[in-house]
Image (cartoon, rainbow, N blue to C red; front, top):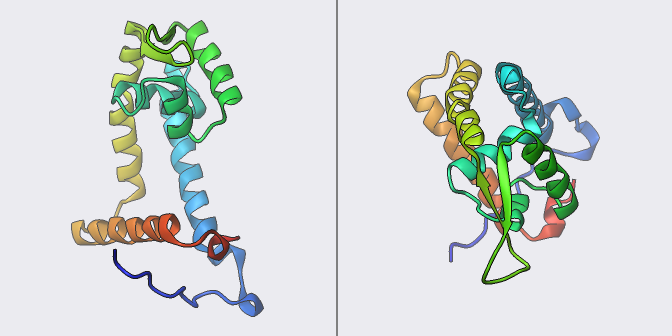
Length: 163
């Protein structure tokens, strides 16, 4: 296992500016991406909270309620309410597992698959617009930096990641 690097010292309490924080900038970017994706998917009647799990089901990232809740960063209650709305729109169907009654499987209906097919096109268009002016090398470097931050977050002791 690779030894962990010591924490960086880019931020200090005396000069801390929230608008310059990486968390603030990432939240702003995520917010603008989510708003634009939702705007471009408005004709499908899918909200940001709804298209994410639909797409995760479509690409096979999750097949059960528990997996989908974890993948979508939602608690079980919130996921149940969300799935109630998606089922009422006839986009997915829940079925209890025959092998383990505690497990609830989720499948997309044909309407759900149809709605999900458009999502990659919208995501590509929106993210490419956000990356206007970046060279291919800059884009690869950015992905590398973001992966490094994510890896640091996953491997650092919890107390060093307090906000």
